[in-house]
Image 1: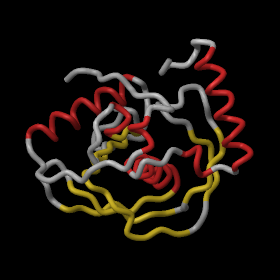
Image 2: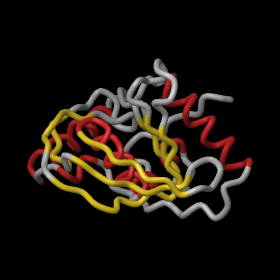
Image 3: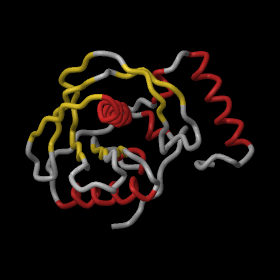
Length: 173
C-alpha cells in the first residue's frame, strides 16, 4: 500500500467535518491500509482520513506505531458515547509538524465505530489511548487541537505557523 502525502494546516480540508462512510467496502479497506502505512511511516500514533486529503469519517490509531500486533484500532464512523474525568498532556499532530503543547482531554472514553468488516464495536479507553481517540475524532469533526487551547496560546501558535509558511519552512508550504 502506498504512503500518502499528509495534509498540513491551514489546508481547509482539516477544518471541515468529514462525511460518514456508507458501505465498508474494498475501497474503504484500501484507504485504511494506506492510512496505516502512512501513519507508521510518519511515524505517528494516529491518523484521520482528512489528514491525507480524504473527507471520509475514517481514522486509525496505533500506540505502538506498528511495533505490537493487535494494537491497531480502525475507526469507521466513530462516535464518543461516553467520557469522563480530565487529563492534561502533551499532544502533537502530523498535520502540525514540530508543534507540541499541553491539551486537556477526557481521562477515559467509550467509543463506538465500525470495523473493517462493517461490524459495530466498542472501545473503552483510558490515558493515552483515550487522548489519541479523542484527537482523531476531533480531526473527523473538522477540529484541530489548536482549538482546544486558550485564544492567546492558539493565536501565538498560528502566528508561528504563518511565519514558517512565509519563510517556506512549513511542511505544507
